[in-house]
Image (cartoon, rainbow, N blue to C red; front, side, top):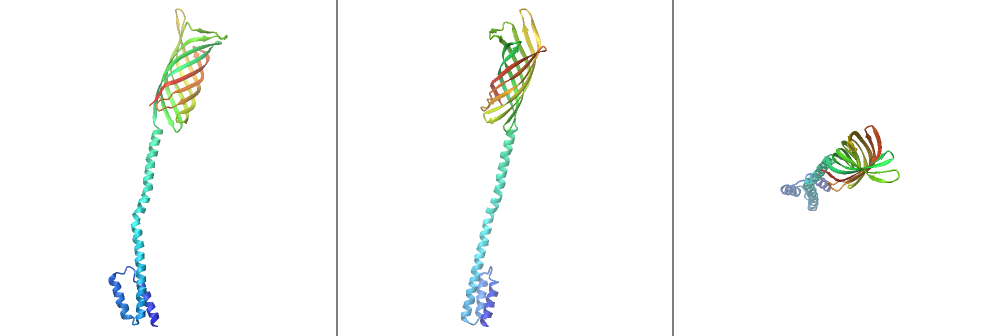
Amino acid sequence: MKKISSLLFIVALSTQVFGMSLEEYNAQVDKINSTIKDEQMRLLVKQELAKEIAKSLSTQKVDEKEVEEAPAEVVEEESPKEVQNTQAVLVSDFVEEKDKFKFQLGINAIASTLDFYGSSLNLIGNELSITGVKKVDNHKFRLGLGIRSLKADTITLENGAEYNILNKIDYSGAGVNLSYTYMVTSGFGVGAYMAFNYGETDLCEVDYCYNLDTTISELGARIDFNLAAWNPYLTIGYSLYNIDGHEFDAASAYLGLLNFEF
């Protein structure tokens, strides 16, 4: 009977030891000494009490360790936000750079071979152009204005004979051009272009000159190169000359060596 009552006493003590101070422990020991007369039983109860206090202290250390580590967890939760903010800034900069509108200034060389009633009239000249450029990913769109002048220097007859032009045949005019390029790499791209120009052709004989209204419509392929601000290009295409109501087919090529983008 004494043993059962002692075990019940141990159970009652075990429910009160959590967070026990030194004074409370001494009070429990005095209570054990006065309540349990059997010395061995008192020793057993004290041992069980010591075990329960050890468990209590171990649990408290674990709780304190979790509290100490809590700030580190907060930092880990906040760090992804910082990464996301950094990514958002980088994406913003990229979009701003991608959508930036730029300009191109260029002086382009032009060569055109016109089918002139079975002979080939060879014209050479140049064009001063200013172009707006919009780039979206690898796609480049351009819309520009140009002022050009052409001069017929030689004519090649059907039999292959070539002669210098003695009479003056000059064209001067202005127009618009539209082009698209897909940049295969950062330094190379392929695309297409179209242009329309309006001006006059001066046709001079020995003592008299005619001013003939002239339009030039063009369509062709374009090859682009990109070296920092320098953007040389080459085009080859078809041209339709309408000189005072008379239409002439031509093959034309542009070489844009002095072409810079800002």
